[in-house]
Amino acid sequence: MGLDNQNGAFIDLELEIKGSASGKLAGLNFAVKDVFAVAGHRSSAGNPDWLRSHPPSAAHASAVRRLLQSGASLRGAAHTDELMYSLGGENYHYGTPVNPRAEGRIPGGSSSGSAVAVASGYVDFALGTDTGGSIRVPSAYCGVYGFRPTHGAVEMEGVIPLAPGFDTVGWIADSPELLQRAGEVLLGAAAPGSGEGAMDMLHIAPEAWALASADSAASLKQGLRQLQAGARRSGVTEIAPEGLKTWMDVFRELQGAEIWATHGAWIEHAQPLFGPDIAARFAWAAGLAGQDHSRAQSVRAEIAARLRQLLGEDGCIVLPTVPGPAPLRGGDLAQLEQNRSGAMMLSCIAGLAGLPQVTLPVPGPGGLPLGLSVIGGHGQDMRLLSWVRRIWK
Image (cartoon, helix red, strand yellow):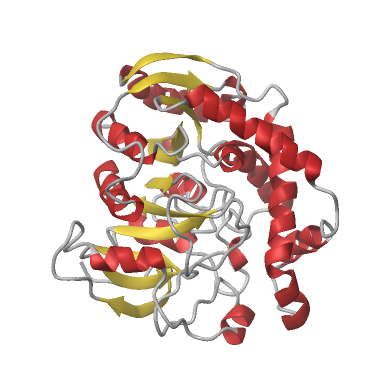
């Protein structure tokens, strides 16, 4: 498989490191989102001013090191949205990677290049990050498998942060088998929830399904039936009596406050040039500085406790990953923001509770890719991955 950049997945095509001669992932190759430290490489975080103002990394990020030691070889640094603060994948400075499975449509972000690299067949799997949907959304738009782990399950050491209270290291592959194999390495052999356990209860969240367009929901329900056949029980369960819009607002407030606390000083010092949409988001986040966020923190704690109790070890929630197919490239900013809002209402569920979530590709209207998601119990990452591998055909 020759590596090329025909679909614009990579910012650095020459970044290659051979993995160890043996290991669980020997013979496979992976790309990294350009926020992971690789010794001698300067990460851009999707912004030229970040690239210019930060030195090369002295050592590999923990996740990169684990993969190399397992036998996988690194092949290329993949594009990302600016400072990971977007779900679209259209970068003002570096352009937009081409979605190979949805012609003329955005790839999704912020792990845009990682999803495109896998969907194009350039690499076997790819590392990304997911704070508010940045693995799950591009995986759904590009028709591949994506996994966001339990918050804190994979070390963030050596990864440029966005909002540490929500940031996760995730990964993307083109099969559930490879998604699980990568998980065995990144989560560790002794990860909680490992083994071949079944899902006892599959919860269908009506408020989440209501966000999907009618034709998309019809397509997704074919995948839902397959998941139901693989679980002991299933039923409709309301998970957000306050409404997912309220949940999204809590998520955005807490995330925005953390983002400004993480990057505000650099932005004020470096005065970087951002694309219009990213600049507007950072300006909004700046306005959260110094405010009292205790109410939002309390609501988040209540949501997390409720969902963790509901799911336990062997429960799961099934929901659309995104409301519909990827929007067209170069679309109206207001329409894109509306689409982003719908995606965030769906993706904030796992984010607020720190839960693992896998997104599965489903053919949608006109053959365009859709994503069907399964959220598992806290710490039940390997149970979720192994269950999906067994029952999803």
